[in-house]
Amino acid sequence: MKIKYFAWLRERLNRDEEDVDLPAEVVTIGDLIHWLKSRDEAADLAMQKPELIKAALDTTIVPHSAEIGSAKVVALFPPMTGG
Image (tube, rainbow, N blue to C red):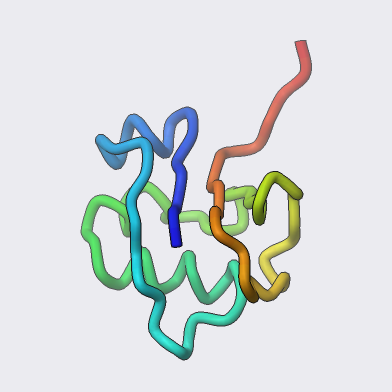
């Protein structure tokens, strides 16, 4: 699965995407964020307030409770503003 990072997440992680093999216990977006934080100090710092992180599964914005299922791409990004 591909994870794409946008805006300040990309800047703080110093990468715009990565390919990962998710462990079986990672089922939801919330699980994914927790797993990412647990395996990478930069991610832990960048995602200190996981409730602020927005997510999309294959271009559809979803809540943290959404199951990842067979999605090919997860996008993670900070809240969007208008303008």
